[in-house]
Amino acid sequence: MEIKEYFDTFFVRKMRITIRSFIALFLLYFAVSNVYYFLGPLISNLTPSRPWLTNTLLVFINLSIAISLILGSFLTAKMNRLQIMCAWATALLVTSLILMTVQSLSLVIVLLCIQGAFFGLGFLTFNLYFYEKTEIEERGRIGGVIVFISLLLSTPLLFFLRGTHEPFTVLIFLCLIVFATMFLKQKGEIATDERSLFEKRNFLLYFASWFIVCFNNATLLEIAFTALQLQFSTLVDFARLLKGFAACFGALVGGVLSDRVGRKLVLQFSLMILGIASTLVGLTMVDTAYIFLNIINGFSWGGFLVIYYLILWGEFSSRKSLGTCYSIGLSIFQFSKAIGYAVLPLLDRMELEVAIFISSALIFVSNIPLIFAKETLPQQYRWAPPDIEEYIESIKRELKRIRGSV
Image 1 (cartoon, rainbow, N blue to C red):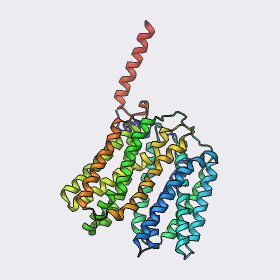
Image 2 (cartoon, rainbow, N blue to C red):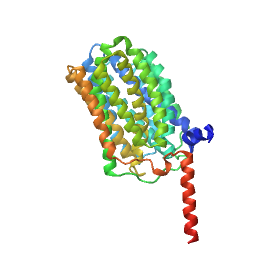
Image 3 (spheres, helix red, strand yellow):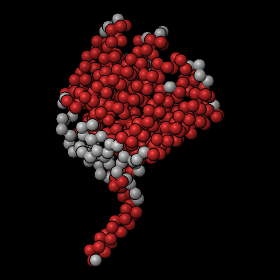
Image 4 (tube, helix red, strand yellow):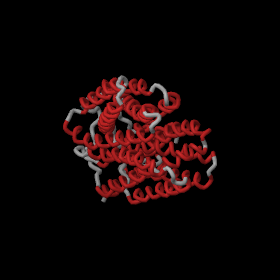
């Protein structure tokens, strides 16, 4: 078999999304994710001398995002999604303009919480559009490419603009969101998959794994990274840059493989290598292990962004429960972040080695529910080498011939 044919079979087979839909989804994801990335530094700059206030603000903002994700599932079921998208983007833009002019800290807190609520509603609406514009066998590759390009552009932006001009940067991305809504249509160009893959047991298994990953990331892993950054302070910027670019390739590789071998295997592999990397850091405590952990952490989370954030929860839903499944899956990350910011001051005296080893143990534990979970990508869409596919087809033809002759 020629290399080109093998490449086409593995990567680009059955891609049906239109260019218009892809551009709209990419612009929305790129803008929305960057608003979220710059929100933390923006808040830190508002309260530079009061870290306790920064933590409190981040708790309330993440809670407002999580609550709006839950409530948004009811709103998106009743209202026109394009109108919701335009409304929340405009509301974020207006509140950001007001935020740049006010001096009252209490008003700033209120505006930031309102922004968090609108952000949650917007990200839920984006995920619903992503699900409706894509087919089940292409979602991983499309999501992987979108996240890959977005992170590839976002990583240098965050690296060079972090700490400066956050309000104006956020404003630019909000304008981009408003612009991106021009590419959207109320009716998707691709028919929505009406089949329901929802099973309570399977949903709970994936949810349990995701909950452990989120909680660990927001607490113990955050403590470990903070302590490691103090220990390897000269390597922090370099490690962050590598982590960002590793996330790019993790999203692309994870997205492609999730369409070919399944979502479950990609998640299991990502968790396994993340647990191994964390354990190595705890055992060695050398600078190369710290760099390696950042690379593996970025690579794993690139895959998590595609599968856990964009794909998985929609595949448990019917058309009526689409918003509910997405809101539950997405909100757990924000609730975990809120819990993390609330308890971090209480856990800051934990020994680095203890935090790393407990974190590593939790990562391995998070893989256990996935062992008993079923794959959400149907068997007929999973990749097999073309020669094997031809062999299977020949067997099917021969069986049909035999049955026809009997």
